Image 1 (cartoon, rainbow, N blue to C red):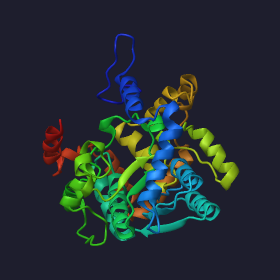
Image 2 (cartoon, one colour):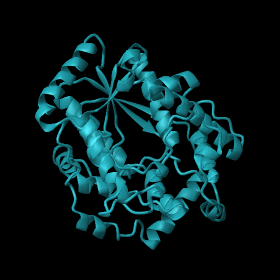
Image 3 (cartoon, rainbow, N blue to C red):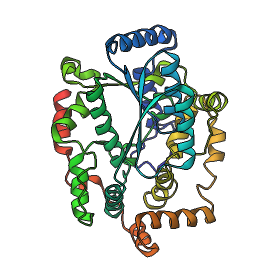
Image 4 (cartoon, one colour):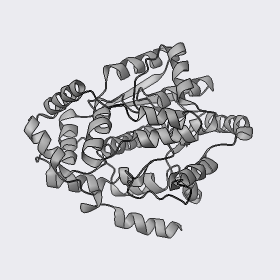
Length: 367
């Protein structure tokens, strides 16, 4: 990591604070190697027992990326009965769609695909672009949370097994995203100011009480005493195994005819453009620095290899122009409008109404 994280701090030896934070996360979240087999066995036994009388005993997300695809393979191998959920927000790459089709067929998964109303989602994303806030992806994250919560309740499922893992994702500067991903108040405030007045009646948004439950109670160990309120518990299954991202990708290629692609979360055409153009160009953020730092610290990549890879351009000139043309056409804006948006000064999510105040009060109560 470097000073593109405005809050980075280096010690006298030149080691940044993210190294200590990474180790802290590993110590706290990664199951120790000698305990993995037994604790995974206990976890699976518990999930099977709790879902014994239901159609499914767990939910998994399926984006077409490596992490979620490998989780899909694992849950089937462990004998679980998952309901796979995919959110189609209009930006799926053809490659991601093919990968999902192959996974579903090979693993014989029941797949629920939620298709967001594109007109509504387009208006929201465009408003976020115009607002010049850093975390445009919180719209998708919010929608996924609502849908999972809804389906968990509908099918009486208690466990959500996620692809998020501490080994390859523990480092992410807090200034590079908005921490309160389910902040519906912030979404509404931004849309009210920058939206074009199009109604968004069907977009999945948390209401206040479900937001509090999902953010602070569902699946959080510190709220065990309120466990009866939790509809679903979120579990990072990859923290129970020795997870190597490249080895997992190679395995999927061999076993499921999975097609690999460059970049993290590039299964979405928008996420690819957001990470490869909007973030570096407008916010000075290259997320590869955080991703590579995790891989270096977990022994999956050498620092020398990372330094060489980071020199590679995210787009060629031709690809960049082609992508910008595609994005403008998809949003229905001119190149001039897009350039004006890109040239606007970045703003903070906190410049708009948010649940930040109540968030701090809750966190103070917890301490």
